[in-house]
Structure formats: C-alpha cells, structure tokens
Length: 419
Image (tube, rainbow, N blue to C red):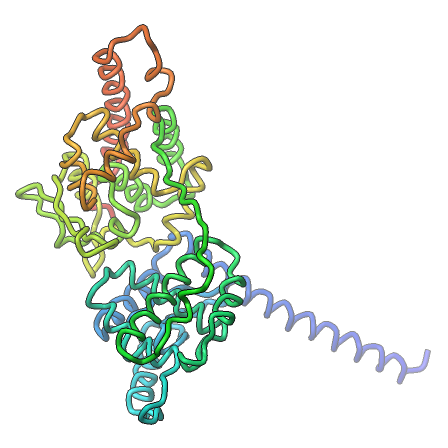
C-alpha cells in the first residue's frame, strides 16, 4: 500500500480523534453547567441562592424594581422594566453592569420636545409608575410591570395619541390566556385614563376595546381526607427541601397569601408578645396582625433566617409549582381557603375576627367564601343521623389529628434548622 496514502488516512483519523476529544470536553462542560443549574434549582446547594440573595439586597439598596433568575447556561439574569435584562456570573458583576446602565440612562438627555405626546414607555416611566407606587401594594406593582412589558414587547411603545382602539384590540387578541388579557386591558385602560386626566391625551382609546370575559375560579378548601393525604405526601417527599415543607405548613396554619408568606421577615415576629405581623401584599390595607399560634411559633423557631432576615427563600413561581409534586387536585391558594373554612366552621371564630386575620376589607367576603363546612367532609355534613354538636365534635377531632401530624413533623426538625 502507498505510504503517502497511509499518511493521508492516518491524518484523517487523527483529526477525527481530536474533534471527538473537543466535542467530549464541550459536552462535559455543558453537563457540569446544567448540573450546577439543577443543583441550584432544587435547593440542594446554596451557591446560586447566595448570589440571588445578594442581588435581591442590591435591588433594595438601589431602589430598583426587578426580579432575578438563573438561566440554563448558568448566568444570573436580573430583569427590570426600566433597564431591561442584565446578565452576570456573580452578584458583583450584575451590580456593576446595572450601575453602568443607571448612569447611562440617567445622564442621557430627554429628546421629547415641548408639546410632543410621550410614548407609552416615556409616560409609564416618568409619570404613571411613580403615581402608582404611591397608591398600590408591591404585589400589584409587579402586575403593572408585567403588563407594561407585554405591551412594549407587543409593539405598543408609540406616542400615546397614535395608539388606536383597533390596534389595542388586535394586540390584546394575541394574548392567549383570558385572565392575562383581562389584566393587561385593565392596565392599558387605567394608564390612558390617567393620561387623559392629566391632559396628555384627549381620549382614552381603550374605552371601546371589548371587555374580556373571565370566570374566576374561587377555589375550595381541602377536605379533611385531602389534608391528611397532603401532609403525609409532603413530609415524606425526598425531592422537596425542608424549608419548602415548612413554607406550605405555615400557609396552612396562618391563611397567608403566597407572597405574604414569602415576604415574612424576622421583624414581623414578636416571640415575647406572641404577635405575628403579616406584610400585606394585595393592598396597603392588607397589612395586619394576628396571633402567633403555638404551632406557628414552633415552626418559625426551627428556621435560621437568611442574612436579610427572611424565613422562606423560594420564589413565587416556585411556590406555585412545587406544591404540584404533592397534589394535582388543589393549588396553593386553597391552603388559605382551608385555613378560613376551619377557622369559621371548626374553630367557630367570629367572621370579623377571621376577616381581620386574613386581611379582608370586611367580613362579607369571608362569609361568602369560607362558610362551606361541606367542603371539609361532605358525607358528615349531610348525615341526618347526627346532631350539629356531634358533627362539630367529629370535625374538631379530625382537625386535631392533622395538627398532631404537623407537630410530629416539627419535632423531627432541630430548632434553627439552616435555611
């Protein structure tokens, strides 16, 4: 066989081996990156958690409204309505890039001429958002920012007087979910109404946009059987970290909203007077006090707060998702329904007291939603052979069994469990 031909073939083989080696290294690096991401995502490590906590503190320090997440490539992303998305490997890198953007945008001269109608983003950032920050809760502000982003992404960042009813109607029809479409329409209507009030525009083009029909799912309480099954599955689940198990237990025992429980800080808990302050997130009036019940006190004593003083570290989206690992028949907010139903129908607390605990403006909503003892045990409720006193005694016994299950779980956790 010709030697030149052999050398030629060997060269091809050597290049192929080299290529395989390079691809193997690339694959190995990608796997390591994904494992690091999964590790952070499942809370089996705290490397990313620490970086995210640093960024959250930076957001507070700089008074920037935003949210954070870890992307699949391992980069940390800070998303803001005012400055867009900022990426980095560490919190320090993200802060540096954010500071540069702030300097760039705050020193950039405005090009809006006198008498010129502002664009949607100009009116939103310069006037509307500042107005809303004085009147609505932090949770509602998040909804406003989300709606604004959808509008800008949908091509509505034009002078306000150039946006027509037809264009707004077409844009809204691109939003698949009726509830989201309803929220965004409400945002646009409110923004244009405020612009009209200030004389920025003469008409509100959203007035004639079709109303969105959406039937809200009020939800229902867990039955006693479902409560027993829920806590049995939750406490034995190996893929749910202890802090998340404590979070769901806290919501069940206090009836707090998802974001209210996540926002809980050491400054909200008085262990001496046994008073728990709930940082309301739905409206400014939802800030409230309630008793620090014995089981709740034991639960909080088993958590070591973060450096920022937080008890629970999960994000709102994760709080909604993780519970699906345990139950497919209920969503997170229905733990709150269960608290209210038990408070009225089992503990027999006054409706006004329960309304105060749950942050309702008045007792009407409390009575309309949480006076459904049949949701706790339908067969018991319709059993004509038992008196009401006998039914109540059985319900209290069932509830006592569930709180005993919670107490047993808490006793298995050492006090000041690492967050």
